[in-house]
Image 1 (cartoon, rainbow, N blue to C red):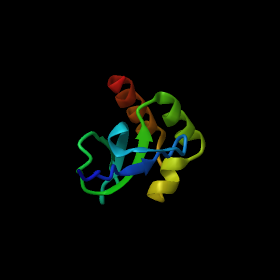
Image 2 (spheres, helix red, strand yellow; image 1 turned 90 degrees about the vertical axis):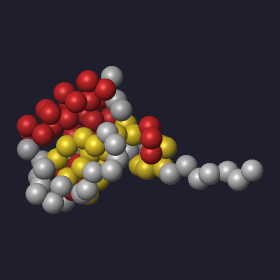
Image 3 (cartoon, rainbow, N blue to C red; image 1 turned 120 degrees about the vertical axis):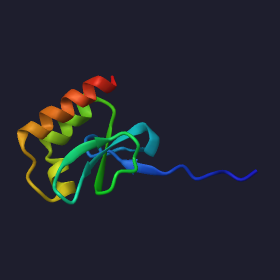
Image 4 (cartoon, helix red, strand yellow; image 1 turned 120 degrees about the horizontal axis):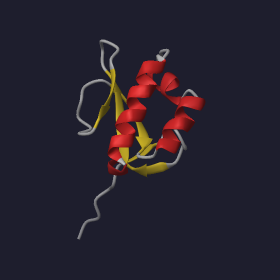
Length: 89
């Protein structure tokens, strides 16, 4: 039996390494649009965050998304992400 390697990613909110499937991917497309990627296959620069609103709040406070995407993020995007995160829970 061979053990398969489980890919891990770091949450931009809490900073913990977790299995990729336990995290939500947030994507910035080439056009600059930011959205949640539930499939993990959308094109663009990705950042990972836990499926909790607490981690999203930490990422907003520490400007984790802005660092990951190397751009300023408008407040409307954060509101949209909060709404989508609530729908997941």
